[in-house]
Length: 188
Image (cartoon, rainbow, N blue to C red; front, side, top):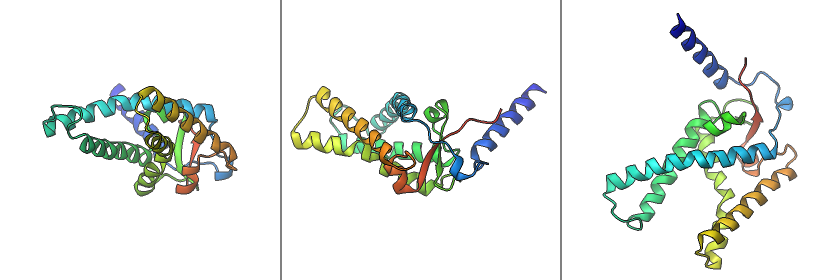
């Protein structure tokens, strides 16, 4: 009875998330910049747990005894773990947990679901949020966590504001990858 109803409801919600939007592409609403940045910040909080578990797994498997031992291997491992995390969520329903909380969904530019290959390309392109600030910190010889945090924050806000110059208010890595963020609420 109740268990079957819950299972059916869960399946209907999952089917709705994986289905292409019923609306034409030209009426899909782009979420506001503040909401997208709030989802971005929330994603960072959630990723803290993912990175902690992955780091623990890596250090256990490699018998890492010191934080600087195997640092490059750990960074490469985390890069791959995050690629799997994002490409899986984006290609299976178009939403990470943070995106679901803020009613944001990733779709292909034509409004259809994103393929795993396109999601992986988007993951790689998303590093444009951080690479300029990290490269600037390295070139300037900054080592203070506070200085790097400020530089990264300025870089992220600057890049986010560039979306205002896009005709559809999309981020430029989405334009490059043929994807777009839309406002999406599950059907009642």
